View 1 (cartoon, rainbow, N blue to C red):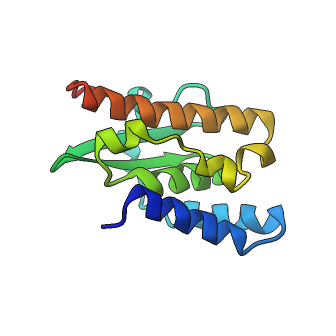
View 2 (tube, rainbow, N blue to C red):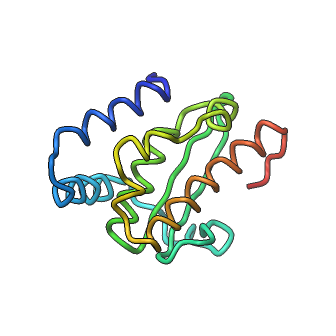
View 3 (cartoon, one colour):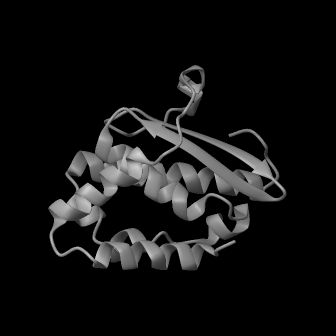
Length: 143
């Protein structure tokens, strides 16, 4: 299993293949298309990420000491963004996620190339993933 650092580097490498942000957005859209289906019955209020203009659902399970995320969004770019995040952090330990700085998002220029509302949504997604990880580090099982 890859480490968080290896997965972040893979994303950085993937983004560096494209010179134009239009191509990078296409990459994000493709990432979103590859997300496994999120069951309609699981799209509940308690799984909605607060602070996103689009609707973004995030679910998490703890198995063998590692957090596994599933997610969906009703907006295609946002779906790609959450796919990118869970692709990096799903399968890591709560402590690894809680200790990470999520700086790869700035390295690839994502935050700087989003509209202010989408950048705010990105910050909310990151904070939710961090919060879930911290809760598990502290021994709380409820997300």
